[in-house]
Structures are given as C-alpha cells and as structure tokens.
Length: 137
Image 1 (tube, rainbow, N blue to C red):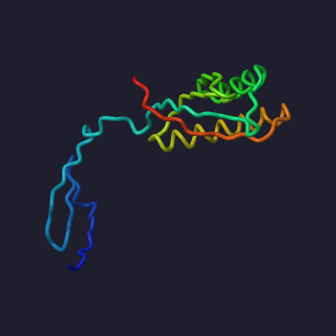
Image 2 (cartoon, rainbow, N blue to C red):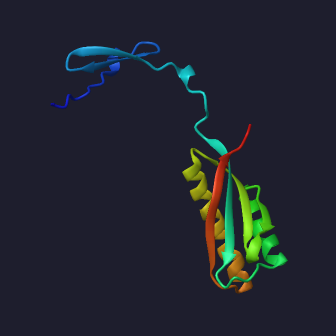
C-alpha cells in the first residue's frame, strides 16, 4: 500500500471546520473550541521518599531547612518522617501530565536536598518516587 501525503491548505479553513485535502479528495473534520474540556496544565500532588545512603535519619533542623527551601519554590511541601530514617515529601506541582509533574518534583527536591545536605555535611542521598495524583479542583 502506497502512502498518500496529506496536504493542508489554510485557505480551506471555514469557521469551526477544517477542510483537509488528500490526493484531490476533501474530508471535513470538526474541531470546535468547546471540545477542550480539561486545561492543558493540571495541579498534581507528587509524593517522593528521601533517604540518606548511610541509613541515618535527617535532623529536625534538616527537615525544617528542606521544607523552607521547597516552600520558597511554591511547592506547598508537606515533609514528614517515614520508616527507617526516610523522609516523605509531598509537593503540589503544576504540569501537563504526571510524568512532567514527577520530573519537576524530583528536580526541585534534588536541588533542595543538595543544599541541605551540603550545609549539614551529610553523606549522599537517594530519592524514590512514590506516586503522583491529580489534585481535585
């Protein structure tokens, strides 16, 4: 089967219709603006787990410093102690999808943790993704 190239002629646009020209045949496809129901950017709750590689726990001072750094970036952080010295971090992120929200949250946490770890002279850390869910409006 031979591929047929699609040619889009902008002169054929009329109202909410878009006329496509394909090998001399015309096909009308409706694209009314009202079909877009969800905003492009959504608000996500992203949860991550942060742990020291030596299995030690982060001090109260470290947790406060990390929380303050994330709050400066408008992430609305909720930072709590987890099991075995881990720190659970929940952030509110605006992004197009869950993967973009995860990436932004991980980058923001990595930057904040690097700052806190350097200031406190701590060993390396590991970030683990827990989940990302859409916030309710």
